[in-house]
Length: 344
Image 1 (cartoon, rainbow, N blue to C red):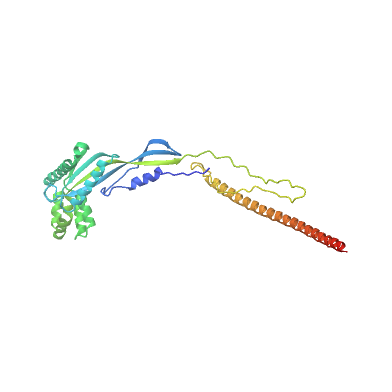
Image 2 (image 1 turned 90 degrees about the vertical axis):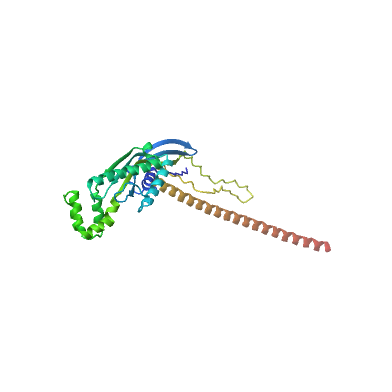
């Protein structure tokens, strides 16, 4: 039995789905994928199974705001790239029926400078402003569960940016940020380090004035598995035996042998679920070598028999020719004798 097995393995599909994300999905975290069998049908010599591979993921986008402002400026320092990526993601999400949004979280932030009360109002206003933007452009609140939150003074991001920077008096700045003073006392301590504070105003505080949006969604991918249907193994053909024709008494013996001509080797591939693949493959190779050896021996035997028959026929023809020549010579001698007698 000749078997062909072709499959798009579900395990491979899970890896492919986990590793594939659109270019616009900047930060994606996914849990383990779930596989749901959708259908199973026969297609000629194949069984075709379709499954849905689902995983949870999220996409993050961040836009910056100017100091003391809560109105989005699309042209401000990288905002256009973020908004274009968001637009590409939303466009693809709307076209893909296998994407289902669970929730959208919009968080407004303010930098840790200035009065805390003002920063609280700025953070909330920035979150509402960006929610209005996505509602106006995409209708998010009508379609999804959109939540807003705010962080008045983001000291955590401030510390991260300071730690990664090459600013002057960095260690002293980190000690102030990690201290237990009030936000106002921390700001006052930082301002007493003019070089460090000037660096923070230019490079650390502006990126903190932002809105971050995370879209939590379930994403699915269709996977198809095709399995060849195994057919019953046919019975082996009988091995032909030589046939010998009886020889007439006065003629040389002629023998005929049926010659088997092999036009290919049929290989049986075992069921992938069976644990006998190695033994089956060894048996096939052994049988193939035996068939080749038997074919060679049969060919050699036929060649020897043909040579023997040809030799016998040649000797018989030579013998007959010798007898005919002798008889002709005898007849010629008798003819000359008769001619001499008639002449007398």
